[in-house]
Length: 92
Image (cartoon, rainbow, N blue to C red; front, top):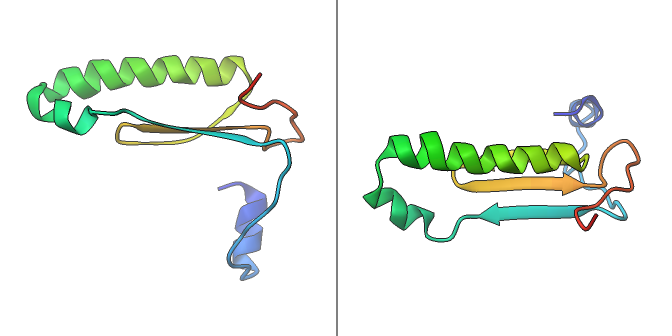
């Protein structure tokens, strides 16, 4: 977690909710992944397919100055315009 958020947690602030203008959030979930995982070998599915796909996402995120929040299984979450006063959003 960012240091500023940790400070707020330690002060007992809950919930931590901020309103921020100009922020874009992308949550990508792969349709059919769970069904495909029953039929495909894990080495291919995770080792090659997800690794390659998420690596491509990471390159786009880096190129556009966005921030990857997390990957969860077959889902990928990224945000633009949140940190350091950036005006970049996912639209750009």
